[in-house]
Amino acid sequence: MKLSSVKILIFFSISVFFTLRMEAQKPFSEEDALFIKNIFDTSLEEGKAYFWLTNLSENIGGRLAGSPQAAAAVEYTRQEMEKLNLDTVLLQPCMVPHWVRGEKEQVRVVNSNKMGTVDLDALALGNSVGTGPLGITAEVIEVKSLKEVEELGREKIEGKIVFYNRPFDNTQLRTFYAYGKAVDQRVYGPAKAAEYGAVATIVRSMTGKLDDVPHTGVTVYEKEDQKIPAVAISTMDANLLSRLLSEEPVKVFVRTTCENLPKKVSYNVIGEIKGSEFPDEIIVVGGHLDSWDVGGGAHDDGAGCVHSMDVLNLLKMLDYRPKRTIRAVMFMNEENGLAGGLEYAKVSNEKGEKHIFGLESDAGGFTPQGFSCDAENDVFVDLFQKLNEWLPLLEPYNLHLNKGGSGADIGPLKSQLGLLCGLRPDSQRYFDYHHTADDTIEAVHPRELALGSAAMTALVFLVDKYGLN
Image (cartoon, rainbow, N blue to C red; front, top):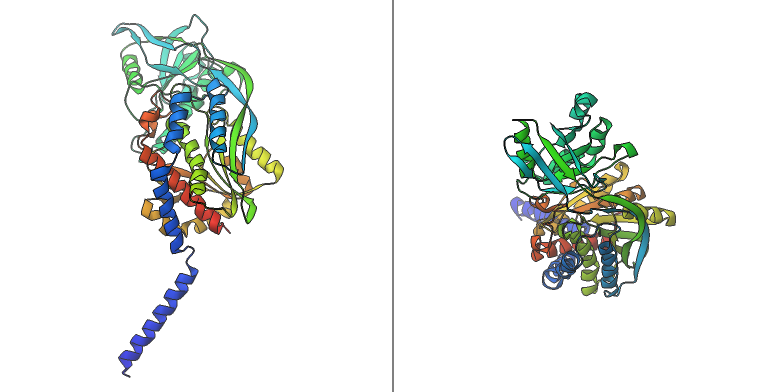
């Protein structure tokens, strides 16, 4: 045999050896790829997410914690999970705040030299106090940050209505980053303005879109003397008000009748398939059942709830018996208190449970693009590396993995040292609808919603089959 032939034979033998070795070490099989394909096919053709979401958004509507609609949503999702023949369906009580909006807000520029009286599109912020029946009229002072309020001081703030007008940074490709850079003025701005004697606050709506749609959302008061009325106005009206202020002093009339009522008992809704081999290792998927009262809460977060319910539904339809316990949790009161998420983690810790994996959907029902992952620092690298071994199975569906946040409701489980992930859909349109009256079923495409259910189910399947050790 010639030397060149010997070299070819040796090279071929080595190649075969390493190929066989790599196949033996590959952390998944061809059957996994076929099963994931079946997950997507079943979700797109037979999934229940859009049917459930239509009922939540249109027949029940906005589901603010403590409201009759929230109670109806609890009962509806409990009944629907009962129909899936799960091993367990239960209600977990938690005490929730009960804020009511009251009558329609009145916010208007009064006696402008340039425009006369102008009504502004507005919504009271969640947890805000009302103005009283006569309303408040005061001069407006515009600021771009909480720090600017501090710099202006009581001398310039006292007796005024503080107008927070820092817009979204639309250069951010991921709109959640723009939201994070702007939202402090809504959450903490009213309390900060009150410290310096402001009588009310107006906040630019949290969106990068210029339109006439106001966005509500929570504001936080830590002390009684910080409680002043707070409203958000549309971005178009924010620009109008800012332009008027650049030309003349402006007074605005604000009237709201919102109030905080005594706390009420509500519930997390929990459905579970018990693990066949490792029942004490828990995988949880979830979304928050409550929403703001002005729309149908379709993207925020009805989509996350039906995604999570559909994970259990799809696994049942495919006759998959999980090795580990898989739970779907409809958390209550994420929007203005996080009572459900905190209670779930408290009870879980008291029971000594171990959540090896948590997956939350709270970023809308748009086309899924992947998952962001989080864990305690000393375990994150190992857990994230394990997840990345399955990327070849996820990438055909345009799903990617990155380090980042997971979700507010599963966040309190971080101390159990599992991996926490958040579904990450396309975010470009999310803040067009977030916390608005436009967040209805018409804003959700059934195919995009079904893809979200399938993406979550695929990842849950892989974690259940192989674990994260």
